[in-house]
Image (tube, helix red, strand yellow):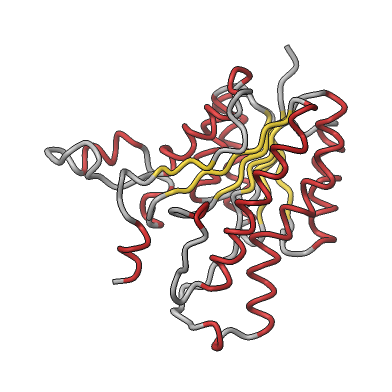
Length: 256
């Protein structure tokens, strides 16, 4: 059976990296998009090639820029002729706690472009390819309770973009169902940078003795859900927003 190709935005580090490794192990060819992490992207591509023989390429580009999105897709299609799975992992974030009026116009536009409009740029290019083969999987990432459009103090631009993306993800699911294309969103919990590239077993070992949900979330937790959603037999799951939070009220924790 023909190997499927997955394009992972922001795939060089963090959750994107763990997803690339997980899907390479499952036999996917990997297109690793990065913005600045060139050495990490090249190292990851070599790793998945050497360990899994998956086939991989690295594609530089800032997804907030339309011209870069066009180039990312064109380079991927030039190498592999198809994109079967899009994992939209990348998304700019500002860690400074700012009220809406403190954002500059440039910051606001960049956060909305990177987290919402970029999905329009990429899916507009990729969906026609998926339609031709009557199969495709689109995965986006949100945040806790994003489907209810909750307010998030000091994160107005990011929250506005992600809640818009939740609606867009569900709309894509409805519009493309007839072509065998599914679209789903995963809402990770508060996975810190230290744990984004670690495994579930590492987390269990570090929090041995705690209750099952009282451990740190990891990149592998998210990668496993992505792997399930992109499976051939997950075709009935579409338009879903799936929290992976360990039952933690992430927003309440963030407000403290």
